[in-house]
Every structure is written in structure tokens, then in C-alpha cells.
Length: 473
Image 1 (cartoon, helix red, strand yellow):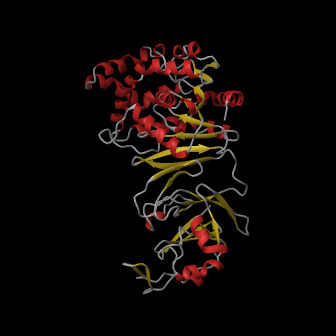
Image 2 (tube, one colour; image 1 turned 90 degrees about the vertical axis):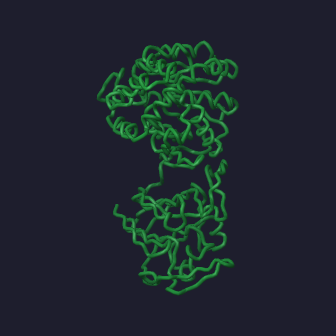
Image 3 (cartoon, one colour; image 1 turned 45 degrees about the vertical axis):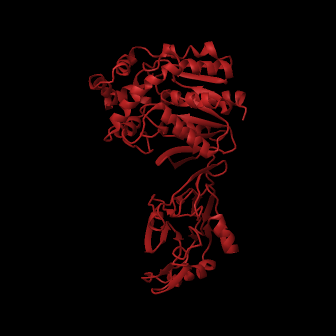
């Protein structure tokens, strides 16, 4: 569907998506118009718009970030609002404007359909207006920002062209996106990010917010990308959140001298996300690096953990065999000589090896996996990040006894789905869970490290049946 964006001055854009015509923050006063909003803060229009409001043509909807400020809604724009098909804005602005406006809450979706039957969705997202943002978490709104103009909106067009930064930076946005003419599927995955400690943390989210929640924690060297098929498979019945850790996927990648790349720190970031989203009870899917991240969270907040889903995630010394010998040497002596062999784990051949070793049928493993992962590993500075985490993985075995004590004390219902042909976390690491957990469902699958790639459908159904029987939320 063709999209055309026309800049009309200030924060005003005309966005044409197919036959749909949207207008942002209408400002059409002529040059020289003055407005005093507060003492000492006068605004003067220095340029007339290239087209008059009455000549703009039919508008299906005006997307209004907020009505409090003249540079986002001037006199002419305000007078024209009743003539446009719909005005979508924040709850505060909708209340002020009255019947002419429709309120859009954070993450609420409204659909626009024109006479030609074309439909697009408008999604309200958290936003910031001019002041330093303060992250606030609520159960209803997830990550929102507190400031004098809470809930300000900007616009992202269908082609993901960000417009909001031109009006009040920084401003995440209302999202206008092309959509089918049917209602959005309950299996749809949303792609979101929040600011945590100055970092943009990306996460995928799917499923009803009031359904039992699964926190999906990815492994090395991938990201939430590994859950791209599992999430829609389960989103009809479960609420899922899958973050990217700092340095991985679509999250920020500060360098090693800018961020403490340890498993303690990764767990703190994920825990902050959990708190911000208001997740009070959840199952945890733990895979590879996700195990030390998730077990740190679980032992700190055992009352929050509904169940555990362990997929090639280690918590026992028995699971660290010969693959780990060069990494253990690095733990013992952190030298450049000991680091050099580990750099070989960051190459394209090594990434392919992780995805393909131990699988039944190579032709079922999509090369899109290493096509996604390897360019991220090849970013300048990322090798040093991965070496830092290889080294800090040595902090995990000393915690195994406390994790095992957590299993014995709290007895979380646990599903083990393990690729038994994995040379990194072999099946020897799966069996000891039987010694500590009483409510344990145990499956060894004839596949490799990234078991979801070959047995995703099987794992999804096992999770569905396990949670139906064991979830308390």
C-alpha cells in the first residue's frame, strides 16, 4: 500500500496511506499570528502553511498529540476539528475538547475504515513531552512517562517514518499502520521498547494482558527473535513478554566501558521491565543465557513464579562438559591468550554450527537465523561484550546450590523440554532436575541446541497442556 507523507510546517503532516488521509497536530494560522501561553513564553508564527486548512481536502482523522500547546493545535486547526472525520488524542485532551475528540489510552487500538473499505489501526503508545522522563510502571499502562504533558502523542507512518521528533523530542508515538480489513488477530505480536536506565530495551509482547503470563528469556547468541513462532502459536491463550538483553537483538548496545555486562546486571534490567509492566505472576521460559538470568529473578521473587519451562538451560555442574573447557580456562585466567579461542565462537561458522548441530533435518533450519544473528555479533564492540559475558558465566556455577535449594524449597511446577543432541548444554544437565523437583514433566527431544527451530510445534503444545494443568494464574 502506497504511503505519502507531506510536511506542512511545525508539527503538521499530511499522511496518505492508500486512500486514507490523516493529519497530525493541525496548525494552519497565517504568518505573524501570536500566542501567549504562559508569561514569558510567547509564540509567533513565522511562516504561513503551504496550503490553507480549507484547501486541505477531506481528512479521515486528525491525530492530535495534545491540545494544550498552540504549536500543536493553533486557532485555525482548532476551528477546523469538527469538519474532519475523527479526532484521536490523549484522554486528557479528549476531555478538554469534548464530543469532537476520541480518547486513546496507552496501548489501546482504534480502527479507522473509510468508504472504500480500507482499514488502518491507530495504536496509542507511551510518550514524553520536553521534560526529563521518569519511568513509571503500572499494570494497565506498562511503561509510561510522567511529565507535565503526560501521554503526548506523535505519529509513525506506515513505513515506520518517525515524525514525532520534529514536534516535541523525544516523543514515542501513536502508530498508524496498514492493517487487513479484518480485526487484528489475537495471535498478533507487538514490537515495543522502553527506556530503562538510559537504555532502549526492546521486547515482543503477545496475547491477552489478563491471561497467564510467560516471560520468555532468550539465549546466546540470539534474541527474542528465537520466540518469533512460539509467541503467535500460544497467544490465543497466554500473555507473553520476550525482551532482548542489552547488547542483543534490537536493544541498546552500550560498549563494555559503558555498561556492566554481567548476568547480575542483565537480570536487573529484565526485573525492571517486569516491574514496569506490572507483571505480578508469571511462568519463565529459560533457555541458555535465559537460565542464569531467570533463576536470579526466580530466587529473588519466588512468590511471583507460576511455573518454570526449562529448555536447554543449565543449573547443575553435570551440564558443563567438554564444550566448556576453554571457557573455564578463561574463568581461571582472564588473558588475551585465553580469550582468543573464544572469539571463534563468534564467527558465522560457529553460529551456523549452534543452529544445525544435532538436528534431524538440516533443511528445516532457516538460514534467516544466522542472517539475523551474525550481523549483530559483527557490530563493532560486540565481541568484547560477548567475551565479558563468557567470563561472567563463571559466576553462575557457584549459584547452582542456591538455585537447587530454591527448587527443593518452593517446588515450582516445571516443564523440561530439552534438545538432547545439544553439545553446549547436553542432556546430562537436564536429568538432575528430577532430583530436586517433585512436579516435573520431562521431555528429551531428538534435536539440537535451538530446539524451537525444529520442534517448535511440539514444544508449543507441551507448554499449552502443561500450563493448563499447572498454572495458578
